[in-house]
Length: 306
Image (tube, rainbow, N blue to C red; front, top):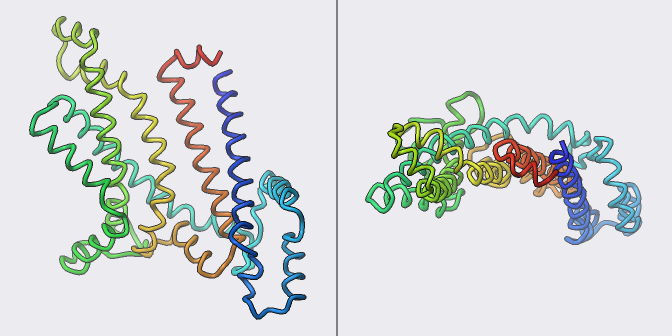
């Protein structure tokens, strides 16, 4: 319990800092009202709009006011849609969540076995091939991979639809493209962690006792190698939020990424700020869950916190 409470306190502090930065950075990029109304807008209109949006107050007061609004579940009102930002985000987030879960599950189901195989065949052609595939998946930009996937599998071969979200077949291309980065990172870290664990004395002792390779690797080695892998999976889950922006735009996927691009294009700073705050909340929540899971997998961490 002490471990969970300490991690919860750290998560709360991190979220408060993230919200404060979102407010500060929205003002650093220039006057949002001037950007919204244009350079030809009368000064009186600009000042009236600033007062209506609360931007005429000192920056610390704006930060405190925004923190209070967020605590009440109020993310502001969209300037373009003229409705609460939370309602807009709530309507788009399920599509982004579906894409993220698909990509993350694919990353785990492919990345972990690849890393284990590479560790078991260390310094062989299999190991080099797996690591080459993993490194390749991390090297190419997502926007280029997305466009190449559309050109090849949709336009040329006609195997899969190019965009939208009308069914499960539409999620395959964007989901696979988005999963390439976590597949590479999970595979490389799993390989490194498994290689270290396989050289431990207790693994050698298990083999000497005649335990099968499946039992030795699946129960003893993989469980002890899981801690850094769990960490990278949690980080990739949060990182998929930013990576999904490019993929969603290319594939016309109606999620938070495409919504953020539209909000920036229409200079709807309130909606942009709300999306950033919501993304920070998701990222902090995922990392809090990973920290708690860390304590479950390794009791020494709980005892250290206590």
